[in-house]
Image 1 (cartoon, rainbow, N blue to C red):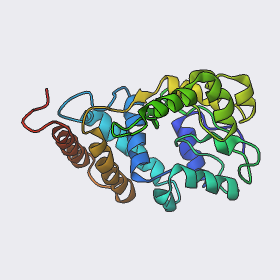
Image 2: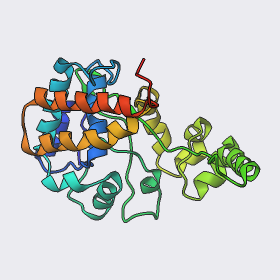
Image 3: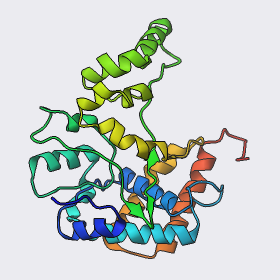
Length: 258
């Protein structure tokens, strides 16, 4: 493969050549929609009434559909891990533009071929602004061993553990010192240092009560549009309805959204 794509136009050209694969399940599709909206200048869920303006939403949906139509349709059934498995096992695919990162695939010996991770393409001279979510570590309020759980949580989250024992045993650390550690990066083809700029400028996905109900429902209609086409404004109206419903579902009985 030659130079990596730098622009959205470069990405479309490579996709039409059959060299691109990316996740297409509903949640990844929704995150890509968020990403394009943010990159085009408008973060989602900043209003209580609508997900995003019609102008930005229509443009983002159209761009996603153009990219989707250039890909092998089986991408709609793939999550990030299945994409990475395909890229390490099948020489046909050379580039994945958007996906959650798993540093394991950049380590020697983990798969048939190691993958290299980096930053994203540009749209109108601006690097794509990805969506940041992430997994968490929590202690149940019903736990019978809260003190032991607290001790373990403090141990795992400690920066020394994060950049040594945790990483060395296949983990993907959350502490920034691990992401900038030279020894850690040498072991995974600079996965962390290469992708950190994307995380630093990322949009933090919504966190209002009830949001996960929206996330669980909103990706499928977008994926259907990418597959079959349709009216973008009608789709945005449907997303807005799901968004408003999720806000109500997240509120205690007898209270309204402020």
